[in-house]
Image (tube, rainbow, N blue to C red; front, side, top):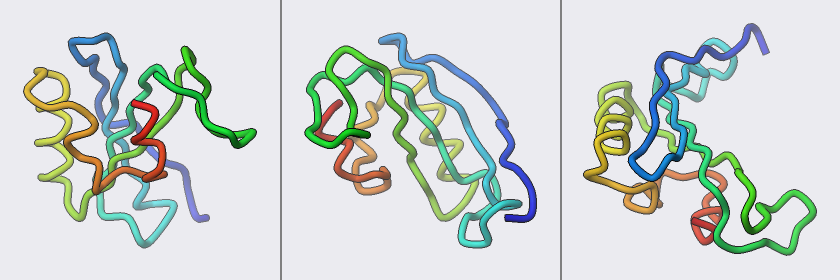
Length: 101
């Protein structure tokens, strides 16, 4: 690692879920500039693993894109309520966390 990540913008989805745009490109070469959305929903189910989300608790799920433009569009759609995190399931990581939404 050669730096730290930056939080670019914060918002709240209509259901109260906090979201933020992040830049990890200074830390990891594999990330495009400002291409990550982090969301902090409340788990609807519990996972079996010791680090898995637990029902009723907030957990972090990342939504990664190949460019900043797509991340901005995702962020705006989540904040204005026109899309949900599940709509971006193919971009989520850990991908198996989508089942807890």
